[in-house]
Amino acid sequence: MSTAQLAGEQALKALHKQVLPFLMRRMKEDVLHDLPPKIIQDYYCELSPLQKFLYDEFAKSAVPGNLKKSLGLSGSETTASKEGAPVPHVFQALQYLRKVCNHPALVLTPKHPLFAQVEGELAARGADLHSLDIAPKLQALKDLLNQCGIGLQPAAVEGKFDLLDDSLDSVSASHRVLIFCQHREMIERIEQDL
Image (cartoon, rainbow, N blue to C red; front, side, top):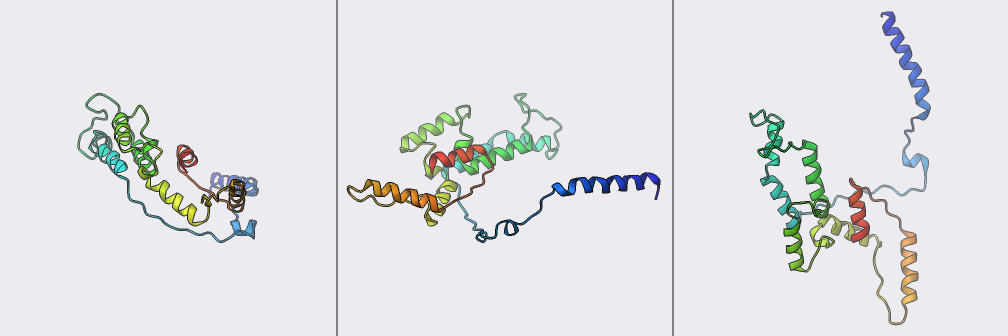
């Protein structure tokens, strides 16, 4: 071995000695012994008609063709659309589709070209962007939480509204849920709609 390689190995060992105390690779069971076992359940949800509509509209738009061009899959070397607008990066397109699958309201902002049309159709049905029927993931989450006894509203007995408040406090105090989301906006949606 050359002296440069030896010096590199020694520098790497010194770096490991400095960094190793700061690396924490522990299992939850090693840290907190009273944790219940992790339960993984997969829930499969079909897209709502609105989500399918937005997904299909995206597929019909010029964006997928422009992405193919920018990736070199269609033989054309151009990286701009017919209107001269820059081609969105493939990750932007995936991000859009991911948001559509999470909740249509994540993409349906007033700037969206289909916003007015979708708002009108939802209003005609007596629904809005906060309706659970347009977001099957939220409906599935609500069902799962209800199965665990979280979010259930006990039936109010006539004249016993203080009992209702006490029972809600005890239910919420005895259950904890940790929900991970890919987008901060989705967490806000969950807070608002559930």
